[in-house]
Image: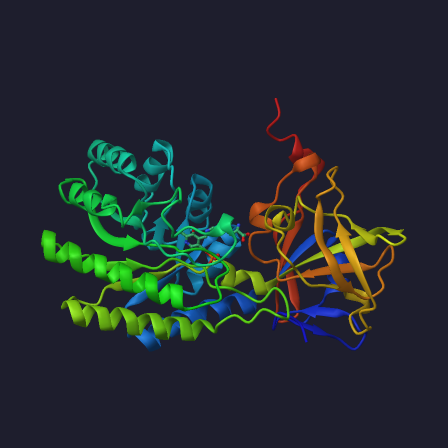
Amino acid sequence: MFVSDALDINSQGNLTIGGADTVALAKEYGTPLYVMDEELIRTNLRRFHTSIDKAYGGRGMVCYAGKAFTCLEMCRLVASEGDGLDAVSIGELYTAVKAGFPMEKVGFHGNNKTDEELAYALDNGVGHIIVDNISELKRLEVLCAQKGVKAQIMFRIKPGIDAHTHKAVMTGQIDSKFGFALETGEAFEAVKEALACENTELVGLHCHIGSQIFDITPFEEAARVMTGFIAKIRNELGYEIKCLDLGGGFGIKYLESHDPVPFEEYMERVSVVVKTECEKHGLELPFIIIEPGRSIVAPAGITLYTVGARKEIPGVRTYISVDGGMTDNPRYILYQSEYEAVVANKASQERTEKVTIAGKCCESGDLIGEGMSLQHAESGDILAVLATGAYNYSMSSNYNRIPKPAVVFVSGGKSRVVVKRETPEDIIRSDV
Ligand code: LLP
C-alpha cells in the first residue's frame, strides 16, 4: 500500500508509522517533524549483517554510513546492534565519541580531511582511516609519528565503474574527486608508497561506486575489479591486503514504480564473485565491510508538515504550501528527487489531485515535488512525505534562519524525541 513497511492506516483513517498515529504525533510534537520507525532501522541493519553471516560465513562487518542520518541516539542504536560506523567529519566522529560508540568499529572517510580531524580520529582510537590521496597519507604519517601511534589505513580506490545513477552521487568513475584511480596506475603507485611507510599499516582497500543503485551488476563488477587489484598487489609486491570495503549505495523504494533488489541478494551475489576471484588468484578471503546508509534509514523515516496556503493557478498548477521545505529536505532542489506524499488525516481517502508541494523559503525552486498525486489537501491538514529518513535531517540547513525540526523515534507505538526542535535562540547561538 505504501512505499515503506513502517506505514499503515488506522481505524480513524490516519496514517501510522511504527504503530503510532502520525496526526497525533504532529499534534504532540508540532510540525515540521521527522519521525523514524526504530524497529525498521534495526530490522534493516540485521538484514545486512545476517546476509553477511549467511553468504560470507560472517567474515565481515556492516559499517552504517552516518552521513545518511546520525545523532547520539542513532549511534547508540547502531552500537547496540553490534555494527560499525562510517564517519566523514569531526562532527560525526564527535557524535560517535559522545554516544560511547566503540571507536575501533569506526572507519573515517573524506576526500579532504584536515589535520585537526585526523588528529581527533587518532586520539580517539578510530579503527581505520580510509586514505583518499597521497598528501593525506603523508600528513597522516607525520601525525602518527608525532603521537607515537600506528594507524590502520585503507585506500579509497576508483574502480572505474559507472553505476548509472544521478551524476552528483556517482563516485566510482575516473572523473571523481574521491580516491585513487586504478586505470592510470595511480592506485598501484600509492600502494607502493604506503608499504614503505612506518607509521601506517595498509590493511584494506575501499570503493564506493555511487548511491541509490538498483542493479547488482555494477557491485559485482566492483568486487571483481577490487579483488583483482588485491591479487596484483600480492603478485607484484608480495603483500596481501586483508580487508575489502565495498561501500554502500543500495537503492530504496521512493516511489511505487521503484523496484530495489533485496539486500540479501546483493550480498549473495557479491560473495560469489569475491570467493570465485580469490580462488582463482589463490588469495585468502578478505574481511568484507559494507557501508549502507540510505537503505538502513530512508524507508524508516517520514516528514510531517502542516498544510498552509493552497494556491490554484487555473490552467497552470495547484501549489500546496507546507511549513517546511528545502531547509529540511533539500533533495528536490538538488537532485530533483521524487517522493510520495499522503495527507495523513485523509490517508484512507482517494488521491484525487496532482499538486506541487512548495516549501516556505524565499526561493521559487523550494519544492518538495511536482505532479504529486494526493488526497484533496486543505489548510490545517497534516501532510506526510514518505521515505525521508536518509539525507534529509543530515542535509538540512538554516536557510532563511529557519530552525530545524525535531526528530522523533517511534517503537511499538511509543514515541520519544531524539533530536530537539531548534528554537530561534539556537539560530543566534554562534553569533557574536
Ligand atoms: N560509503 C561512502 C564512502 C559514501 O560516500 C556513501 C555515500 C555511503 C557509504 C552510503 O551510501 P548509501 O548507502 O547511503 O547510498 N546526498 C545524496 C547521497 C550522497 C551519498 C554520499 N555517499 C542523496 O541525498 O541522495
